[in-house]
Image (cartoon, rainbow over all chains, first blue to last red; front, side, top):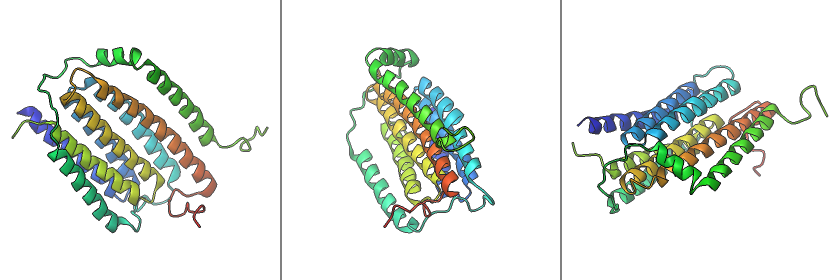
Length: 170
Length: 104
């Protein structure tokens, strides 16, 4: 079945790229592999019949977040990139902790009896999400808009520095 | 090969989340730490979309929550990087090992 093969391929791409983000020692490689991870997750969304979310994932994560992260790498690294992303001293011990965490989560996932309903995937999702966003969740929608505005203003003010910087000191 | 069920997606998301946790705790560079947080947020989104598809296929609330998570993640990465720029301007470093002046 094509979708089964596509799932395993996308899962392998996502996990390999995410491992690259974490284990690569060159920060530029990490940033580019982060974009690969986002694209793989968008593919998984398509397999899950969430076409609108796949588009949002590509637009917001690849179009905005990945690019902002790359700009962040560009503006804050100087000199050689070869060893720009080293792990700290806790690496070995934390690997044990994280493997235990993964084992616990996988045990929970595999032993829980999920109330799965066998139902064909919805054909179209954007209309239904729009109806929820502007209906039942309208207040949350507006709050998210205010949050984005506040974050944008805050980011601009933080990134350009305090008011005692620059030529127009007040 | 068996058909892909909810558990498959949850497994991928759990592993992705654990990779994010590992990166979050072991990275020295602030930008790399932000990347790890993005990995964890993606894992959570994948979980919610999978639950939405397999448990409540006609309610769409899981997908809606994923939309809100993506919104908050975008805001978080913008503010986070602005903070990193601000720190970098003051201290000329983005290494967590050198940002320890509140430690005693």
